Length: 135
Image (cartoon, rainbow, N blue to C red):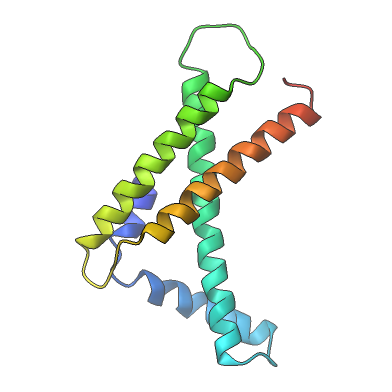
């Protein structure tokens, strides 16, 4: 959460990522137009958001699951729902934080991207548990 909060306070977040990613994309995809490169950079940034919030959801889930002194048990949807809800609250508060940062804006669509990442992360966790017979 500290990493996300810190990145949200970076007034030049877009500039920092584009100075690294865009030259790499231009090198990898020399025939692509600047608009295509920019679109791919945008997709990369949103994918990074989804990944960081998937990791946050896993961490919340693990904290919730291991906070009770119980023997190992099967998957519980209430635990994953609580983890997802906490991610939603944090994503919304993060966007509110960005409203107060110069050159940043808080967007409801970013909350949707973030909680989608959490849902995908928790779904992958559930699927991996099914595959490896953990629940």
